[in-house]
Image (cartoon, rainbow, N blue to C red; front, side, top):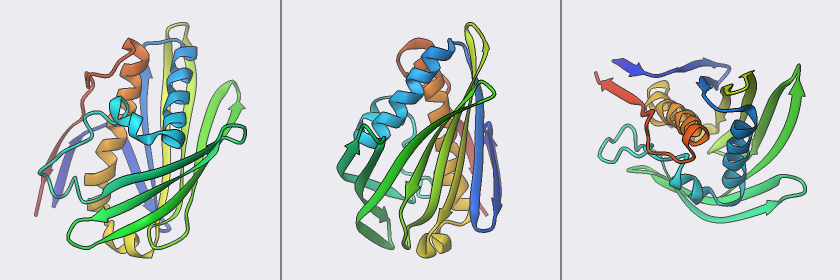
Length: 208
């Protein structure tokens, strides 16, 4: 099988862990990009369905079994603003196989400044057959008064069941292109104040 993708995502796989990195340049001031990154993390921890109104736009691909191999149903959310800690309760559906019911997935945000560059990190905590480890870091760096560099660095290690199910092909088809679309949507939100999928990811999958 050969996969051709028009993406700006680089992924490596080592010690059962996927490491993906996506970078873009945004024509917007540093403060604006930081605000959009904050909005993304806040929505992810408090009202993940709201991400569907902007950050997750154009990440649906109904009718493609490879790209819709995993579905999430969000059921409940808890958030502690003082600690920037929260959790979501979800059902995870794998069509044709099984549904993981009432999965509690916790998250904690930490912020650091390294050599003037912001690292906004979210650590995901869940132990089981679904997920062993996951963290994502938004790296935000000022280029000029009206231009900002944004990198999303993602590390994921799946649990026993998903480690068998999520092959490298499934990871590419399900997660990799969506990661790039999310970065593109953050870029568009910072530049224009809304998302109309101006920077839409295009992917062509050639199966065996």
